[in-house]
Length: 548
Length: 87
Image (cartoon, rainbow over all chains, first blue to last red; front, side):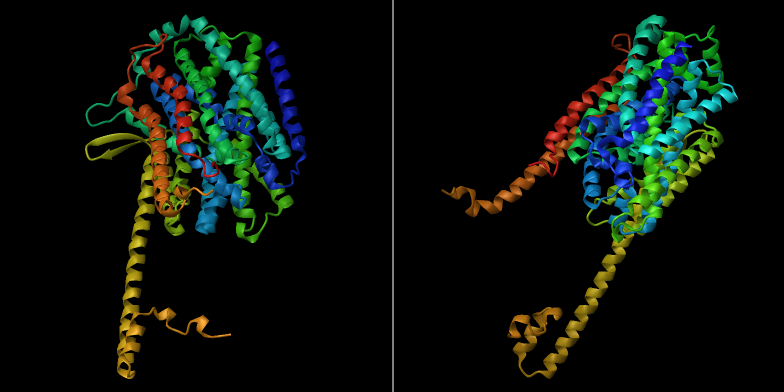
């Protein structure tokens, strides 16, 4: 009862804050810029909370510790990935912010459309963004599902689905009402709750299991380390590296990450946040250690923890630890932290997806003038609701062993937009058709590989001669994507050069013929020499010779 | 009073020099950003249990160390690669 009370005392005011946020700074929420980006006026403090709130999600609290609990050290790739992601964001996001601010873009798809002047490429980038975000929102919904058994509700069908439906309704209501303002303010509370919870877990868990030294002494060595490859098989270290690199390159391409960054008031704020956000990763690191603690903990004699693990599998590792080690009132706080930790990113993700859909499908091209504010904002709210509903259906329909696979599947798709986005900054860009072809190749091959595992894993084993390389499907698909894009770009450049060469040769031939005719026709040789040297385009009378 | 050294014949060479210096700083910044990335991808270098740090295996302690060490690297990169709006 005390758990439920603490939970209600935290979550109800938080929900109120989400609705109240619409009045913050007295903005006109009919404007898409205000509803979707908070008016682009966020300073370092709020951007830090928003980006932190939307990058550190149920993935951090549930999925990664679950992977450590289920598989072992492979889950540590998440730490490597966050370390690589911030240098990538540091290089990518500030110029993107400047370009989007200058042209008034709300999404990456708008930016791509402006740079390549291609509607179809921009629509494909938008669709990829939405496709990649849906499994990520689904992961947040799984986080919500796992939070409710902490309150003593049995994880049977009714008690599992009803709270999820309520939380979903709450999410939809405050997202539609307040736009990005709601997750901004809820993120501040969420972060405080998460820090309290992690500190409590880091103190209570080792205290009840005999200290970190004892915990790690009890974990089998095979789980602490990555098993080395044998013979021609590169083994899990190869999977670790590709997972880290692929996830890091993908992170700041996700629409919700871009939305969080575009809400900042200037590019310096974005850069400053890239420097400060690693503080969050330290929390992720501490949570990873809890995955090891869960492998040592004995859940026998704790019927709620046992039932949770039976129903949800390894994803229930952290909630089960909370049930067995924390005091009752703190379990209520933990459930509230999990719920807000899933609601904030889910809200930003659905807003970002709505922006993409509206920007690319329901609005005229950016060159057609200013967006139709009121109508766009209404359409965006409907689109956000639609994306959330699709994510809910996704949770029910797609069977993954680990919740983290939802995020990794999204990564396979979103990473394919990397060439389109990064090459857009280049002055001499490849043609849009080539980039489009590369994107489609990456998407098709990545999806095919994951589908070939029955949507159960995102690791594929490549055979390169005798060598066997376990690899994150996103990286292999990106390699194909780049091959097509760069190959097409190169062939296009060769074709263009040869076309120019032949045009030049033709014009030289023409000039030669003309000069021969003139030499024959005109008596004075000096005139023909003058004509030969002159550019044919400038050979007419010059304007200043025309006189007044 | 106009300082004649600030203009005149010195001016044309000043621009390439400045450009070269900016290029060197950007390259330095990129190298600084590369260090943590390489450090956390060199799996054979940190895939071991000993030495333990406060009972935590080396592999975990090493990655946690790099999480904390990342911010100074990013600050150094920001110093080396000023934003276009900065003076």
